[in-house]
Length: 316
Image (cartoon, rainbow, N blue to C red; front, side, top):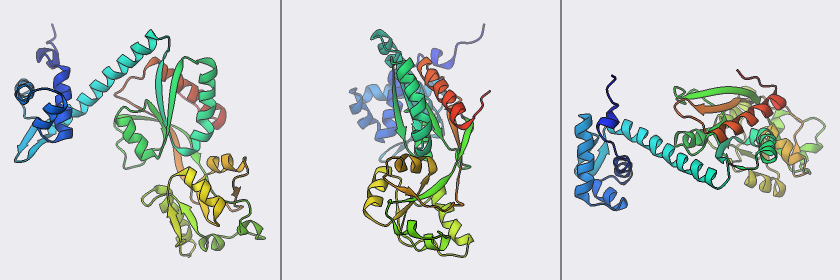
C-alpha cells in the first residue's frame, strides 16, 4: 500500500496555511496572530508543528520580523493556490444552491476585449443566462499576475520572452495590428499624403515606458532616420485617451480593433498611414496547474468558437 501523502500524515490544517500567508504578508508572527484572531503561542505552535513535520525551516527569524526561506516561499505559493481553490469550491456550491451555474472571471487585452469577447459573452448571455461572467481589461503583464493569483480563470493576452511559461498553456489566435487615430477634424487629415515625417512632428499619446509597443513605436521613427516625437503622454487608459483626443491635436497609437470601435461612433478618425510597429500575436492563456470549473470551460469554449469565426483560429 502506498504511504499516505505528507499532508495527511501531518494532519495539515487550513489554519496553518492561512498562518503561513499571514506571516508572509505581515512580516512577523505577532501581527499575523492578531490578524487571524489567535494568540501568539498558538500561532507559534502551529508553525513549529508544521516545520517539525517537514523537517525544514519555513521562515528566517530576523531581529525585526520573519522572512520566508526558499522552502517557505514554495509552501506559501501552494497554500495560496489551495485556499483559493477551496474558496472557489465554496462559491460554486453556493451558486448551485441558488440556481446559478457559477461565476467566471476572464482577463483580456484591449483589442480582443472589443471584438472577440463581446461576441462570446453575448452567446453566454443568450444561451447560459445562469452564468455570471466578469471581464478584466488590462495589459498582459497585469493579467498574468492576476492569473497567477487565481483572480481570473483564463486570459486572452500575450506572452513575451520574459514571462515564465512553464506552468502556462498558450493557444495563439491572431496578430494585432496598430494604427494612429486623431479627432475627426485634425489637420493631418487634410494633408494630400500623410508621411512619417508629419507623424514625427506631432504630439502623441502612447503606451507607458517599458511597454513593447512604446519601444516599437519609437524604433519606427529611428529606423527611418527621424527623431521620435518629443511631446508624448504615456498611458494605457483608453477612456482618458478618447477624451483628450477630442479636445487637442494629439495623435494616439492603438490596436486597430480599438480604433474601429471608436471610429464607428464618430469619436475618432484613423490616420491614412500604415504604421510599421505592430504587436505580437495574442492568444488564450490557461494555467497547467489549475483545473477550470465547468462554468469556466463553458465560457472558454464560447471564446474559442468566436475566435474561429472572427480570426479563423483552429484548436486541437
